[in-house]
Length: 103
Image (cartoon, rainbow, N blue to C red; front, side):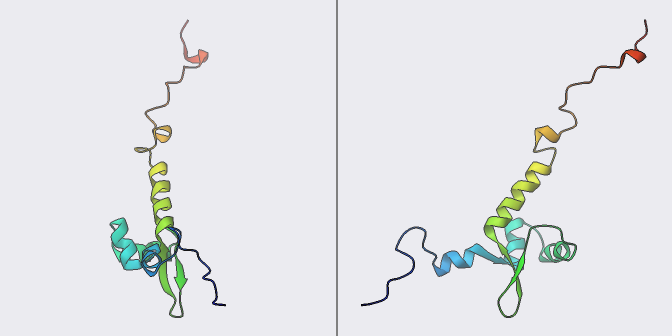
């Protein structure tokens, strides 16, 4: 009896093309984010920027595409221009304390 494949034929099947696009090198991640590879190296050294990891026997620095997208969404939410809740011009004006009011 032949061995059954671990993954059934479906849209969830991981193919070499999807695996290749799921993980990005520093160069590809930088291009995807519109940054220079040097910026990603500096951010990695400072433990800033999107999460990365080392893969394979040579320890190449890689980024997951889905993690890059999540990191970009976090950056958007942390920016006051994109997130009205953080915009200092949006809160309602505060009332003055009664001690400053003249009677």
